[in-house]
Image 1: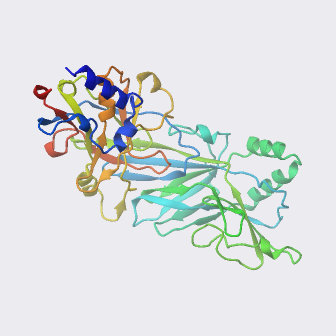
Image 2: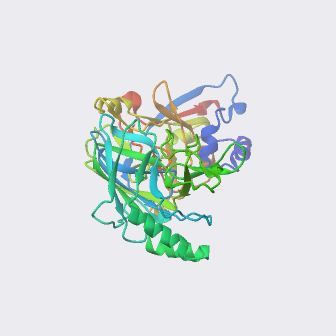
Length: 438
């Protein structure tokens, strides 16, 4: 039984931290250490975690920091197929679009998942129905024309790709641009009639993630667009201001800001929206001791902690640490030579109640532990949470693990979940004062 005086002190320490896993994770001090006399016995116990389940939750895959497309047969995580989508925009200025200009989609690849010895080839198709980038998710079924308007390829050495659109598409685009004087009417008309492009994998054994359109500040003032976007290239007439010329669309980083090319002008147009859908099959190849986790919420690891366990209630709690281990050995041994997976060293853990599982995941994570280099562990201080529960707070819901932020780059991870390897099983380490010393 905890003395009332100590109970009051603990309440002051944790009163504003109910359910605050984040603060608990970042607090490296031993909570309650000021109450521990040097001659008291400290007990360290471990509580094994064994109740793990797979959870497929819903979230957006549109208008993230990146969008992905490709097909990869991962020997460990299964067959993954993704189709990318891009919704074009019209220029915001009143610049006259040259009738003889050429129009490109500039792709900026930033991550490669799969066989690096092959190039990834994609076909580009016209989408045939209106879609909302902010509402796209992994299961979105967006229709597009079966005939492609061309192909392009990406390798691990590719910094950017300029895919030329057909002349008839540019003519349609130019007509739509000049049809309305009112900009709002013009944009609404364009989005009601033009639905963008689907990026469909047709060759290679990999998934490529592309950077979205971004606006950045440039030296000397002003802004420029980088990332994947539309690019209109036209010849400069003699009376045109030569300062409007900037970089070639084929410069090595695709940022359109490095050097000038005489006689040409380049107009970057940001995308209005982007996204992707994807499917994962044959995911039963994991060994019995580990569990696959993705950052897209389709494969999450659900678990519960028995906060009523006597280890939390017998004595005065000094520190409680949740420890998970990544199965790096299995991950590395399952990659053939020349194959890669996107790397990351962070987990994200969410607390979700049952009634919220049918909705898109919008809440921020309660824990974001970094991987410890020495043993590939993720260690989280949850002392404040346990002390709050001991004082009567209720912990509602379960915990769900994601492999990283949902940023549009598909990133798989393997977490140890059983005692197949006793040294790497999920545990909670409880440090407390021997109750006989209280």
